[in-house]
Image (spheres, one colour):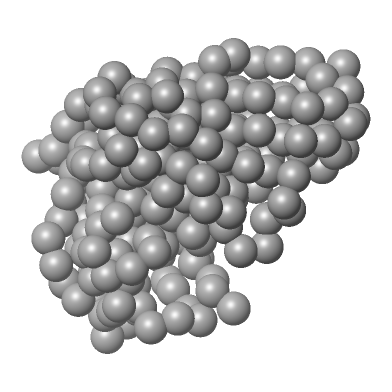
Length: 121
Length: 107
């Protein structure tokens, strides 16, 4: 059974940093692209970042480019999202999502339960 | 960026009704279109991928159609467990983008 478990969310001040983790199990992690998708309170879904399998190319939405970095450690079956220079508008539930294959196809067949990030002073 | 526009933003329907949700892309995306269901406090669930392919385990009352810029999600006979918010999403290219969502409520 595929499981994705996010952690690392919490309350952080504007300008601060946070690192989210997503521990995966139940599939060959290195063979799948992974993404982070967020949902701000009362808003819709927003794709944030994605990375192809086997440590491939990372991609970021313009809203986070230069501030967020996605990475993965295939030896630990974990994908990370390093978030710097956080803003109030980054407040959201962040979901980890598994893609259909090794390339970033952008079709998310499995999702984690999410971790809440609150940016506030 | 490719903009995805869903309509309606909300609708009220009864159990057994046929429900149709539309999604329009700001440019042609071929069939690179996915549909997700989102219930409160639950992770999104993939229903349809590649515009019309039913994800494994999803009931056959859900169907998708369309190509290019115009797409449709249809629920042939609405069931109590289908009351949720539905999102379309283009997978044609990055940045990947979602529609604003359609909330399906009980009439």
